[in-house]
Image 1 (tube, rainbow, N blue to C red):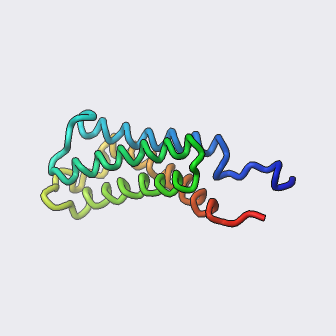
Image 2: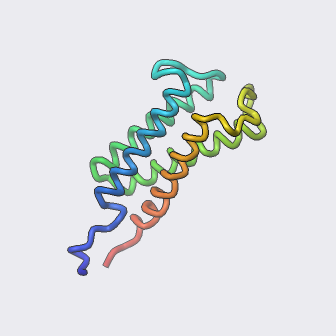
Image 3: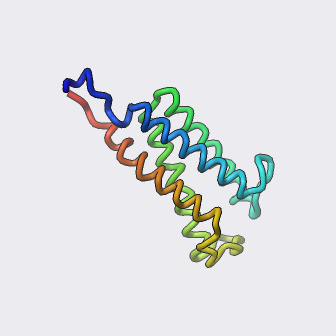
Length: 136
């Protein structure tokens, strides 16, 4: 196959649609966990982080949807890594003024969130890295 007849994976419609759906799922999970779009979790910085994540997930989905794949995949990596890290920190050592979830590793919504974020990371990271390579 020539370069002109091959659709690269990072630009493929199927991969981009999966990225969009996974980003939107991350946003929805966090909206549900915080108690709605207008709710803000305590402590305040955790609530703000939730809102930033939800907005970033929507922006990543839009970038992928409209074909800005390099930026979309990069932001999708952040949308996956941020909450994964937050989950580990909040369940492990805890966060400043936030110890409610320490040791709560098996919360059902948290496990769904981990699965979605891991899938997004496994999809987006290699596609972001591949999108930066020069093609012949």
